[in-house]
Image (tube, rainbow, N blue to C red):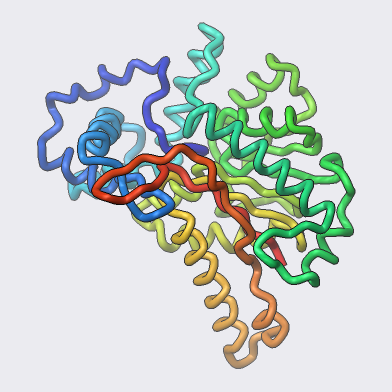
Length: 333
């Protein structure tokens, strides 16, 4: 589930549904729902959006009946990536390609973004270990963070929606060692394990787990998400499922730990706004009559914006300058 780029380079999906069967109306609806926003609020140009939409529509196959009911109204174009059946089918293909040809499969968002996320994350964690919190975060938070180990060996890492697990491999190269990846697609977990074994990262753990109904009872100092929140938001019940996502993530990130989200469908400001909404919802809930611990929760929101990557390549369109990807770090109180 980790990623939003639809066509793995080794997949032959043109046989699923030829592009000449896609109507102009369908392509336009898909383009509108598939626009990739920049950190500054701009979107990809219409030509690229229509290419992405065509690729999305080419993937419209009978993966399961739970998706079919949504396809007639156009919303299925944007929501199919929110269904587990889609990812089961996608990773079944990638796992077959790996076993037959040794192909790694798709690198979601591209290798440059993945390496950038891993190296930036390392730098941010090292700064926190030294008590150097960016953006004038209060010293009270640094006391909690400062209790962590003084190097990366003390950072327990969880990658939710790990997909093929390549982000965890990059984090291992940066010096992290306590690494766990979860995905609700068993095929993704099988592929991630196979790639890790092949590439010599035998210490990385992979588990089948749905972030929306997680069975994990451990808290992690670092939780990373590369595309999973994007995919959840494309489900027809995306708004509800995003609330479930934040509830689960709030339980998985240890106090003083980090949540790092990489998205191609939300800008930095939109992610920050979503976290602010989460905090407001928590405050409102604990103010209700009979709520336990309300006063403490009302002054201690789960997450605060910490920093974001500023070095992604940018493009200019319509007088606006932006990038196709946003990576944002939040500090768990």
